[in-house]
Image (spheres, rainbow, N blue to C red):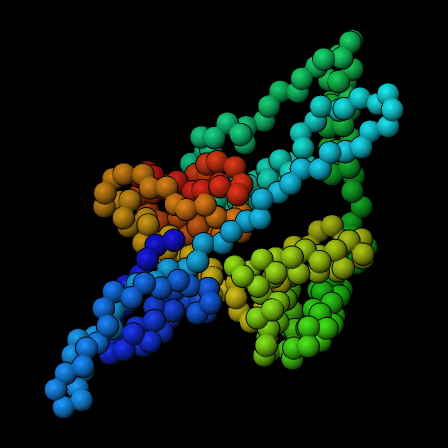
Length: 297
């Protein structure tokens, strides 16, 4: 992440100013003290406190592949592993949300031709049948049996129960915009529901989706959970960071590779760079080391 530098009468005040610029809490930032006030005559201090700070990069837990047990005599399907499929789905979400970004240069995201090692082209036949069934299911899928409001109310009930189970106090609010559902949880002592780098919050969001969407048979809404305004603050900090990077790339005329980020943070960066003139972006590498490269347009 990009470092920001602030000065104030004291080191603590400089740190607070840096947190305001980053838009995060103290446990979500890392600091480096550059200067400290020095004692002078008659109890006065000389100089100012100067620090630099940045948002702690979000770390993604490495995904572990599990071998699927096969019965005697059965053969491996030769398909891609679940971990790789999940990584590709995450990055597809980022790229779809950033239509102005440059095409991916990494060959890992490009579709690979299916290997046909069976006799008579049976593998290709199964692949074609699977794609045809998927196409038909998308076109002939019945409307969701519940309304977005019902799904959102179920998510609010889930989050209220979770807050109580954590021993915290808070209330959940719901905003419905078509099929977009945003549940905001506000209160006190909610840090445990966020966790380092928001990892606990991401897990809670997945649980809420299972509870509110899959249990009710919904497949149309998009549910987002935010606790104590964490996502909003982090998004604002990443947007400011993206604007600074865009200015640096325009001025230097050279591409710049950012530190690895998770898919949610990459989406925010891509979206912010779409609004910047003279630059474009793409993602490179594989999770957890996948990163954004910002280039002159």
